[in-house]
Amino acid sequence: MIKRQANPDIFSVHKALKSYRESIGKPTQRHHYINEARLIHYSLTGRNQLACDIKPVTQVKRKLYAQVICINRQLISNGVDYQLRKQVCRQVIENQKGKSST
View 1 (spheres, rainbow, N blue to C red):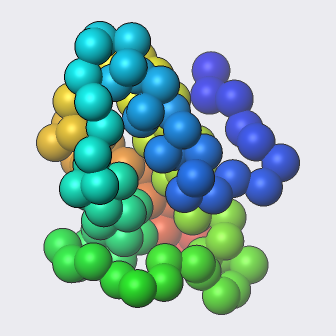
View 2 (tube, helix red, strand yellow):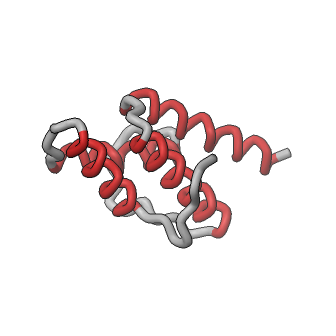
């Protein structure tokens, strides 16, 4: 089960990433954090580029954003590879968008 935070944000993902990488003896560098922002942006939009601001505006988008943050944070904690996390997060969002459009 995925634990949810009251108000998830990118910094909780960064904290999980740093903690995991420290646990396996690897340093966390700037590009690792940038990659996480890209992963979240890709999950929400399907576009593979870095956005300056990934904060969602609408209620539905905020819910999807929170969901991606929580899932990604959990996957990081479980040691799941970046590429697989990217695919899983995108698939979850596509599934949620499909449910809300029906």
